[in-house]
Image (cartoon, rainbow, N blue to C red):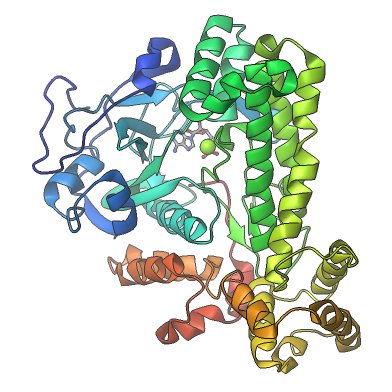
Length: 494
Ligand code: AMP
Ligand code: MG
């Protein structure tokens, strides 16, 4: 471990660190430095996230930052720590977890900067504190892809790799992702102190989150002017909006444990996630999830369940069960409203029409997609192009039951009648991405990266940063996945 007492001034970074979480005190974390990663090299870098942090263009390249973000050199001004949290995993109380392989460096430009895969911490339990190159590339690319799709998410600055071996099902190599978010606080942080009946710490944490991230809740007149109930309400609403985005874009998270739920309603902890290929509400992307608790179609209910766990943890502060239940009750209406709005845009419908039953139109469409296992992203993109060109054959070709499609298309045509087709098409082409991070694309980039060829990581990042654009050179990445894609198995192992 590096010494914390000899800070290394990285030349010209100009980053000013202001470490609010650290000020919460020792009950909330263990101060420690990241573990050194031998002979690191760059695997992928996001200039957009570098800019967010206030780094100058091109600055995310030098050896000083490489060494620092590999955990080999302290950064002056940071106060690195691993935070403690608990949580429910697969529906069961799991007790204490914590940052077992993550290290929060501090906060720059209002954003927390965290290394993931940075070595052992007191919360590593049976783990080795490391992350493998494979899962680090997936997290890096997906964070930035989700952001570009307009979905609330933690961000990723870069991945650094090393030849250091780590054992999973087979031997792999280690990597560190630098993640960036306003806060990495999870539902599990609250559950931790509630489960231990540490009420002063619970209150300190809640007041911190209120003051920093939800100041409106401190003065809101709603819910009996109870700030903690209002906090629960806003977290519920943000989580509902986030999951509505997941369902609309066809994103399956895979491990919706309460320790993987952000208090800011951000998508966090990318593991065995998947963008759907064929549409299937029962799709389970996590090979470890035998019972399908986290199947695609169950995500909204699971998010709601997780919010109940958060509510339970906040009860000593809310003190009034009726208020907590009222806050939780906002989940379904907010989810439904957000989902409908997002799905309407996918259909090219700029607004609600009181005479039209868009919900039924959409559910009937999804039933058709599921019945014929139609590729989800391809369907929406082809539909967007069909509305633009008024040539629907490429969409029809995706269905086996073309008669059923024809019937649905007539209903859709009737609904679109009052809408200018070019306006509808323009909305659809900026709503339905041409490029999503399909598992097989990630696999190709990972395979190349294992051979020290990082071009595909860079190309995919570039593509996924502008997922609605055409990118003719990468047309093949927008098509159906190859046959071997259906055999990819992604487990919790990372
Ligand atoms: P996850 O399933 O990635 O959300 O992780 C659940 C818990 O296991 C968290 O406390 C992680 O920090 C911890 N964890 C996961 N992988 C490792 C690892 N390789 N070493 C130490 N802790 C880990
Ligand atoms: Mg996690």
